[in-house]
Length: 453
Image (cartoon, rainbow, N blue to C red):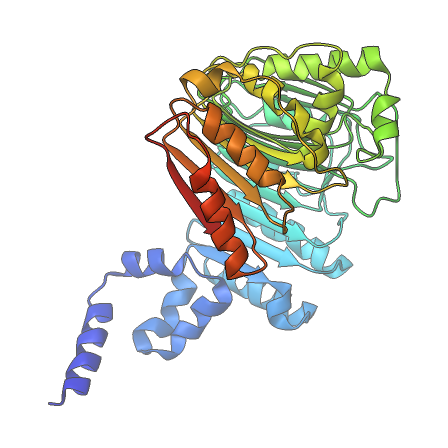
């Protein structure tokens, strides 16, 4: 037999030797459309896809043919009505009354069959009330809903729900989302994308004693609705939280319970300042209210270990630091900042509040002014800072070299310094490398690297 034939036979034997449950596990990582194509492989595979404990289909795979889509999904569920269904994922680009009623019946059906993972995604807000029996699904482990209508409820029982993603949904009552979250006793992973709209509740409250990860994005959508009132707030009470991603330019205030000392946070907030890049808008903010809101947020995050701050947030902090000092971040080990060049003057003040910092990554964002002058050396540069990385995604005119000189000369325990930037030519790259090597180093052990972007 030829080598080619032996390889082909060897490959077929390997697949044929796998038991059904392993094949099912492999196929479970594929959309149903691709799983169905395996039916042409052999007689065994012809019916195997129908035995899968999951259904993952997209209306786009049926060329937006509602009738065919509904027929396929209904047929699959009918032919598998004696089995439990582990996962149902439905994705739609458009809304249709016929389709909406079918989705509701499918969800009700899979709840009866002890569904564990449910994901329903509409491209625009649909009128389907997804929650009828879903509120009482005791087997559900993961729930992801996008652009659906969630009605008010009186009773909810989701005792095993660990993952919940709520993306741009509409809610029948202001407290629907809050009550839904607080009714999940083992919830660990929560993602919320909230639309800024006239019908949206202005206070977003998350209360969960078990939550580990929270991603919150407040989305302005097409920007047709604006509200500059101070009524927009975020309240988070999750003492076990170890990861928080907060992207919200709408809310004017944030109340966050004390976070775990090992927590990682990514903060991009603007305290409802309309034009954050306009220096006049920053200077004209109501000082007392704005400083109080900034102070509350910074204090609530003062125990975290790892923090990322956006250029927008740091611009607000720059205004704050003109009047008050920042709280101490004594547990902070790693800091990632995205700074506008014109805001670089606050960097030493920020670092002074992180006396035990070990790693700093800084990304420069360009604005008009490119001059920097530092008159102080923070404690962390003299005693703890071991790694510094500076990124400049656009061609610079020298500001990153001034920063490099500052850190290389003043960091006494530095182990590694990396400059990442673009270059106009090989000659320019060589000049930068030569310039870095010429700087005096506070730490003789520091390795200096240049990475071309």
